[in-house]
Image (tube, rainbow, N blue to C red; front, top):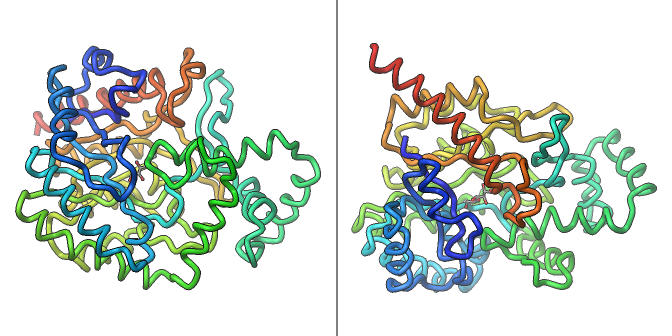
Length: 389
Ligand code: DNO
C-alpha cells in the first residue's frame, strides 16, 4: 500500500521535510482553515497541492471534507450545504485530488476520555474509560435519561467517581472528550469556545427525534446527491467508521459493524461510494471480526487507517501497538486485494519528547513513526510471501 501520513498543513510542527526523510510517499490533509460548510476554492486547493508537490510528495487523500451537521440531521439548510459540498468536490476533482474521507457521526467525531494514559514503559496512549464517559454523560451533561444507557455496576462507579473527582480532573475530562479531540478535525467545538459544555448540549438537541433509520436516510440523500459529480471526476468517497463503533449520548451511529457497512454500500451501490477501513475504530467493537471484515470489504475500500485497540467486555478500550497479529491479517487482506491503496498509520503513542510538542491528540511524531516502521516491516513480509507464491 501507499505510505501516507496525516499532516495538518503548513502550520503543522511535523514538516513535509521531516516526512520525506522517514519514507512517507503521500499526504493526507485538508484545507483546515476553511470553516465547515464553506466551499473549498480551487486556487486554495491548488496552492496546497503545489506546496506538497514541491517536497516530492503527493496529496493522496483529503481527510476530511467535513459533512455539516444540518446534512446529517436533515435541517432546512441541507440542500445549500450539499450544493457547497458538490462545488468543493468539483474543485478537488479539477485539481486531481480524488480520494475523499469523511464521516457521518452526529455531533461528535471520535471519542476518548484519556489522551495520555500512562503505560508501564513510560510512554502514553489514548484510552476510553466507560465509567469516566458515563460520568461525563450523566453528571456533567446531565443528559435526560442517560443513566438508562449504563449498567447499575457502572452507575455505582460513577457515584464513587463523583465523590473523588477534582475540579481540574473534571475540566480535563471535558477537554479530552469535546475539545482536544474535536477542534482539529474541523469539529463543532474548538479551544476558543468558552462554554464547551453548553454548546455541546445545544448540538445534541439538534438530534432530538432523529433515530438510526432517519440518519441512514440522510446519508443516502447526501450520497445520492454527490454521486453525479463523483462520476464526472471519478472521485472515491470513503466514509470513516464510527469511533467507537457503538451508540453514545443517545445519538444514532450508523457505521459500526459489517451489517451497517453492507447496508451503506448496497444503499448507494456505486463503486465510488466506499469505505475508509479504519481497523482501530472497528476493533473497539466486540461485534467486529476485523480481519474478516477487511477481506469482505476490500473491493469497496479506498483508504486504510492502520492501528488496533484492545477492547474489554466492560466497555473500555485502549490503543495498542501497531505490531499486532490482527493488524497483520488486515494488511495482508489489502496487500493482496489492492496493493495500490493509500494507507496511513493512525494515532501513535506519545514517546521520546512527543509530550511537549503540542501535537494534536493522537498525532505524535515519534509514536506514529514507530508505527509506520512496524507497518512497513509487516508489509515487506507479506510482499515477500506474495512474490514466492
Ligand atoms: C481521529 C480520526 C477521525 C477521522 C475523521 C474522518 O483521529 O480517526 O477524526 O479523521 O472522523 O472524517
